[in-house]
Amino acid sequence: MARSYFTVATFNLRNLVNSGVTYYQTNRYSEAAFARKIAWLAEQLYRMDADFVGCQEVFHAEAFQALADAYEAIVAERDGTGAAERKRYSEVWHLPNAQGSAEDPSPGVGFLSRSPILEKRSRQDLTDDPIEVADIGGLDYRLTQLSRPQQFARVALAEGHEGWIANAHLKSKRPLYAAGSEAEVEANAEFLERAMGSLRSLVLRAGEALALRREVIGLMEGTTTPLIVVGDLNDDIGAVTTEMVRGEAPFRGLPIDVKALFWDVEMHSAARIQLRRSEGVEFFTNIYNGHYSTIDHILVSQEFFYRNTRAIGDVAFVRCLNDHLTDSSLTGAPGLGAASDHGQITARLWIDT
Image 1: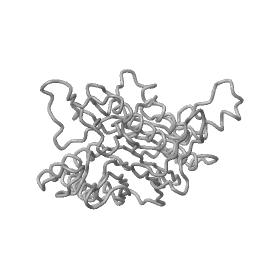
Image 2 (image 1 turned 180 degrees about the vertical axis):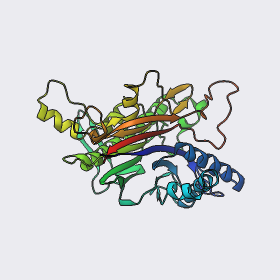
Image 3 (image 1 turned 60 degrees about the vertical axis):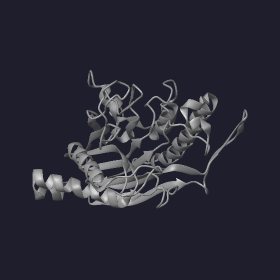
Image 4 (image 1 turned 45 degrees about the vertical axis):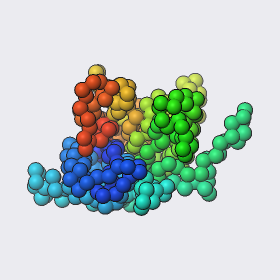
């Protein structure tokens, strides 16, 4: 029996937009700024050296392809044309955001793969199958569209082993205000409306987490096909919305056959798997207003969970590339420049083939 390794990663690109295109009403990359952006992102991809990368904040397919090309050029220059051919991303799959337009683009997602994508699925429009919560105790909720598309790729993880990789970007904690709301201007001190904006973001993120969970269950339940979820879930691993995506661990007193039903659809944090094994490992992927947190995650199904006696593989090594992040709450802290405002997480996994 041989052991085959592969690496998955999550990478928030922080506004990968074509040069000369205005985004968020006022921002635009010059050709020089776009070149600096691509150079930094490509360098980071080289450091990550991942076989599969789920990317967030990808506005345009052309910019995404430019990144893949720049990465391949770095590999060819440093490691030779043979390595460039082996490590090139043959699949550069961009999903645009249906809420955007040519004049006012919105962030989509993208997936890079060194091997062919065998099947593609995506979700953003939920009109035909909305997330609904019936009126319970005064709560009435209905979600018909995700703020960003969710991406699902079936790929060959190793010889004889196919699996799914899901890529998601859930709504951030940034408050959602009604158009023209005075709460957007801090000096107006509209504190209740600002709290209402945070509530809107929270319930949207919760609905998106449930939509992702629904897809996860559909791909996992009753199968032994591995699933890996990567992405910017915009909250810590113990947050309710992240736990919704992961699923529940069964209570220890339950019968084993009932526990197995829970394990079948439970996801496990790759970072936490490593934390249980390695003393002193610390992760953070975001710094906001002095608060350090891990909001980017890689989750694996029980097929890669070391406590599962029927696992086909395991998480070998997880690392977080965050040395570019700075704490802007400190006086004199340097700016990010072309860099991402997120750390990148990579997970190296193995399968016995």
